[in-house]
Amino acid sequence: MNNDTDQKKSQQQDNQPNSSPLVEKIQQLGQSNIPQAPDSNIHVLSIIGQVEGHLQLPPQNKTTKYEHLLPQLIAIEQNPKIEGLIILLNTVGGDVEAGLALAEMIGSISKPTVSIVLGGGHSIGVPIAVATNYSFIVPTATMTIHPVRLTGLVIGVPQTFEYLDKMQDRVIQFVVQHSNIKEEKFKDLMFAKGNLTRDIGTNVVGKDAVEYGLINEVGGVKEAMNKLNEFIGPAVSQESGVVQ
Picture (cartoon, rainbow, N blue to C red):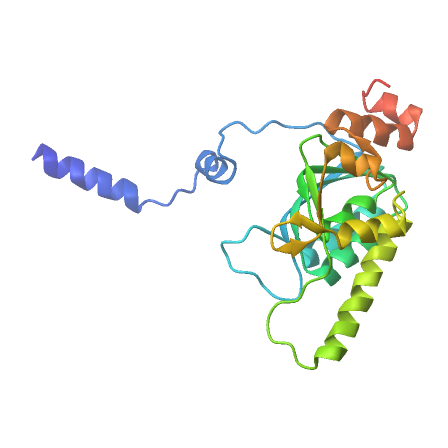
């Protein structure tokens, strides 16, 4: 009898939906206590995984949908309480036009912006990283610079090549205009042979990205917060409790 009763209880528990807030927090964040941050004048926007553009990627891919970020960037621009923006980047790249759209939006925001490359800021993540007013990269992060690629069926090879060449030139010009790297150097890194297995391009690590002029400084969260508060102004920085 006891075994039957225990089985019935376990079945009832299994059938009950996990609707408690505690269970939901554990499922979503892997922890029970969520630290509550005070009201801040700085907004953090993360671009994680692969930048998803016009085509929907498989469900197992970790993606950042650019159609979700564009309205957020407009809201950040319009919100008077937000006085600075930090972009956290750990992306393998993705859709070129979607990435350029995000980079152009970030670059056109009137409020101070700072980016941090964490882990990786590869491919189309490079223009996004340099689109801000100031950029940081942690010492162990990498950035892969390579030509624009195309997969799948190609109809009209000469026309497609011309289209890709123009798109690639848009990426090059954006990066050159928003960073301190020279166009010739960026092209050398993009078309270098032997740095990437069975491919062309260059994998740039931490301080090398700074030496090339691609990223402004090696640093992390502390340095990014200090720089952003410096851009916002000393009066606002004192109000937010950040010591300069």
